[in-house]
Image 1 (cartoon, one colour):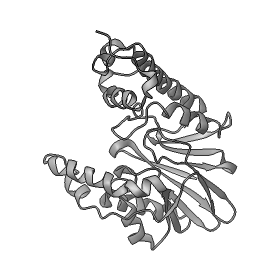
Image 2: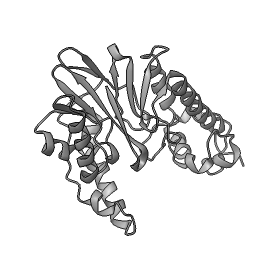
Image 3: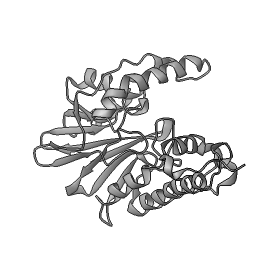
Length: 273
């Protein structure tokens, strides 16, 4: 197995090798960057690229798909059913965003992207056969998105976590995240680990089980704080000011909004006067 860390967005691209070829996990955020990744694969000389895996539908993890197919030939592209069904919608939001970024040096290369959608999907788990190695794709639940997957390579004791785990910054809780469910999803991921498991995050340095458990605790504090505030009748508009949070408040705007929206009616009280 090999992990390449790229400075733009601190993205990680992982290769899993077997006797039948290489599987690439994620493909970066533009055709131009993906060509650099493709050159790195060739220089590695570890075998042909035979499949792609997209950990979720966000652009920085799949905008290189078309380039990989152009460079290495047709190959299956794996993702969860949810991710596949929401790639185009998510990409459109990205294109609209970059249209407005007239001073962004990456604007033109992102807008020049050609989408290549996943064509092999699953809902819960699937196993890829690399000849002498089995690779497991697992959807552990909703968290960063509703369609996250992790890649488990049992014989190497490695898990590729996508953006369920991030090292370069706290995990990004965006408008399509599930902050109340994310801690439980990470519990399932941790359950796939041994004490020696190596974990590749979507962004940042390679980490271990302890790091993932610590991140799960922080996400759990966020979820429980939202539940506590809502149960005490603190209105959403005041939650960021009233709560004691493990991260900077500006990172938690979407978390609070979505957390309040996702709570069952029975777990909310009428706002305090």
